[in-house]
Length: 136
Image: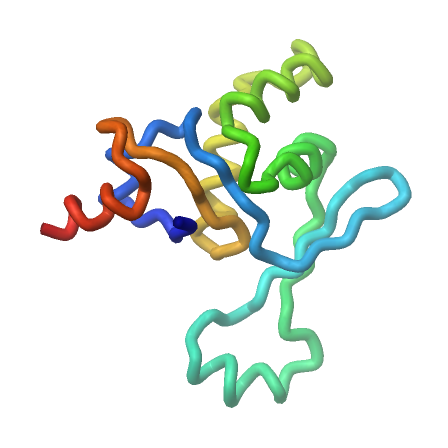
């Protein structure tokens, strides 16, 4: 099951076992850098009444080479651990504080709902079961 992560649920999850999946429109330029199109508003009322009046309903978010690499790896099948290992192989020492960078990137895109998360909680339950326990 794919869900948006809230702060209570995030405490029970192991970042390295999560499988992020893209949930926003994107374009890749000839240099391989990605531009994300993040909606300015998420609220149903705002989307229905205000967005049609705007010339540009999306924010264009241009990613650097690290962000572009992470974005392209977020296919819903690759864990954060695998993304980090592959990034380390590709960029070597150039990718300083690798997992902190990946964690911050994923958290920010999850907050804007540009990424969704698949994975297991630290207690072994799948994400949907973990959310039910946290609500009770």
